[in-house]
Image (tube, helix red, strand yellow):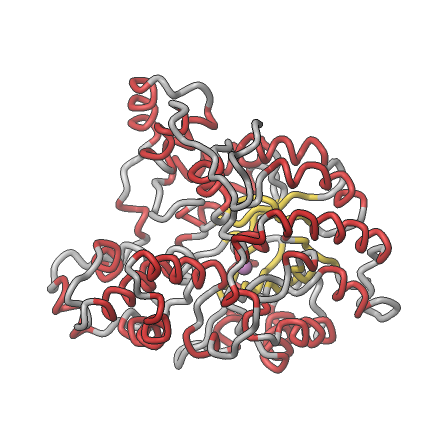
Length: 458
Ligand code: CO
């Protein structure tokens, strides 16, 4: 049977290494070649790409999806969907979730990797059901993390529930690259004992263990592994597509991918990397086992560094990375992945810069303490919670049950603003009301890369 690869170069890899800045025009020339190879899927959309497209690149993410789809006739396109948070940072009402999934399917997404930052399945149920309804492949993501309350058996139980909810496959989503070969063996074995659908492993090289863990996962019977072309691999990104394919050649895990073709495509991406080299940061390029302590995922490290740079406090990164696990314990050990990584990351920065913990608390942390993100894996620190928000308005239901339908209201607003030209535009407005207005009014400009006089004309 072999192992199949999902190539993440056009999504997670550039999100992890160059702050999600790869332009569509650097993707399109190679999509037909990628499409011919025989990947399980190409991850090209979702996560931070939607936001970054508009905000920094002045590109329409829907247009990107359609233009990639037009060149990828054989290979499934994959996106990363944050459950009820879609590609945003808050819970959207159910009608928005339904409409988003419908449009993503219509514009070309085949495989939806759906996860929730707290592993609260109630936040994933609706998107799973809607993907199935629209004929898509629903991949249930387990946000992998380590803590005193997380166990291999617990993750395997979650996989079982996701299968029962209708998922077509399971993804062990190791966004921070924490999985050791031993855990990969145990986890894949435990999940395989409970579910019959294929399992994929998504990891990052952040701690340096991912290639070894991939080998272990293959030996334990994994079906799919996530990799990225070498120019955008290693560091806080995925293991290299070319090397994993080469390592498995002529073994029971053979990916069936043509190494010579992989090398050719790899050369193309080296050229692309060169163009973006000013965005590469030393800290994200080399592995560090410190990630095992602070658990910050790839994309988040570069955000934290940028955030600290703005405050002229980049030298305090080690303190922030030390504070983060403490904030995490206070909040019930959530996995660190969007949006929880941002929510906790910003609070950890504040706790360090203010000189006193929780002297200043973000609205997001308050919302979290109220239960608005869902149920964390373990109880929160009640003392901290009481101190910050008191006892009132704690919710225990599925957070989206409290949200009124929003699409009618959004449509009325978008109509009034004269920016409701299509269902896709309305969805963009729903996701990012402020930036969307600037975008549709032509007020946003493509960021200029170091070494460029100005952004080339589209
Ligand atoms: Co990732």
